[in-house]
Image (cartoon, rainbow, N blue to C red; front, side, top):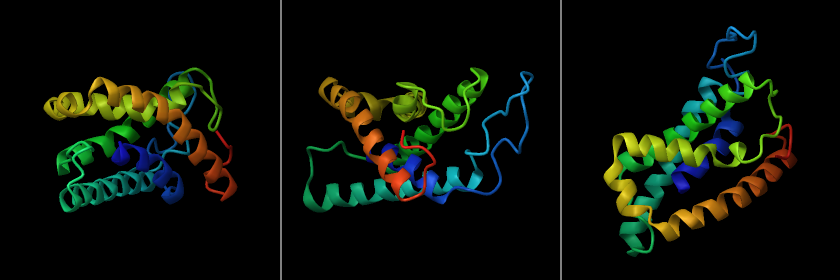
Amino acid sequence: MIPAYVPNSAAAALGGGTPIDFGKVCSDSRRVFGDGKTYRGFFGGVLCGILAGLVEIWAWSSFNLTVLPRQTLLSVTLLAAGALLGDLVKSFLKRRLGKERGESWPIADQYDLVIGSFLLMLLIYPQWLFENITLPIAVWIVIITPLLHRVVNIIGYYIGVKEVPW
């Protein structure tokens, strides 16, 4: 999951510039995504996720780390892009529910990256998903994801990358 975990933090750190929605609003008069979702953040985040995945591929082959799933360029790309696509969908839904940027939305805030990355993988590379995400790994992902999310957001808040610590 490293290629899926890295992009959100990288997007927050590298973001800014033109919003993905270009400031447009939906029929409910709310922004499509909001100012927090930018092209620079999206593509920078995906690139960082891919780079993390390439390091994982190198470590797997160099050190015979067979306890980890065997990543491919396609799997790391789908995990990284899917994580941020999941975040975009969550932001779209948050705006429709009247939630503001930075407002907490428990469960959705923690698992959007997992759902997005798994759905994209399921659509494009289901073989990898079913071969590598076993029940014990899925349980581990469900347990570790909110813990990592909380720790990373607190760090991001204290270093000034995030406006709120959640």
